[in-house]
Image (cartoon, rainbow, N blue to C red; front, side, top):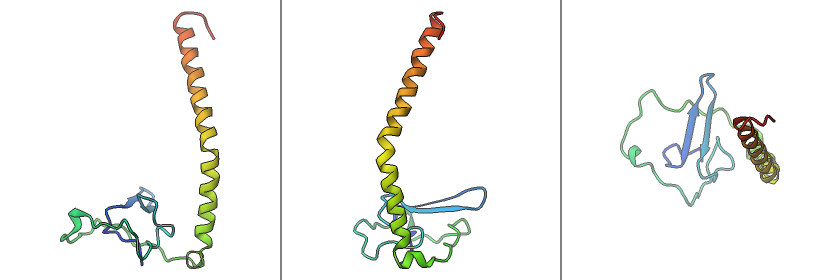
Length: 116
C-alpha cells in the first residue's frame, strides 16, 4: 500500500530545490516515503480531507520504489542508523548543555569585569 496521504499523521514538505520529504509523524511507516503498513493501527483520515478535492498544490508524485524497500534491506539500514543516533544522543545532549553552561559562566565574568 502506498503512503496514505489522507492520513492525519502523514507529513510532506517540499523544499526550494524541489526535494520532498514524506513521512509518518508517528514513525509507524518503516518503508516511508513509499508505503505505509497495510494494517496500520493508527490510521485516521484527516478531518479536512473527508470530502475535499485537491487542486494543483498537492504533494509531488513519490519517486519509484527501489528494490531495497521490497527486500527489507533499506529498512534494516535505517534501523541501524537510528540505533546509532539513539545511542549517542544522551552524550551529544550532555556536551551541548556543558558548552552552554560554560558560555553562561563566561558571560557573567565579562559582565562583572573579571575577563575570561
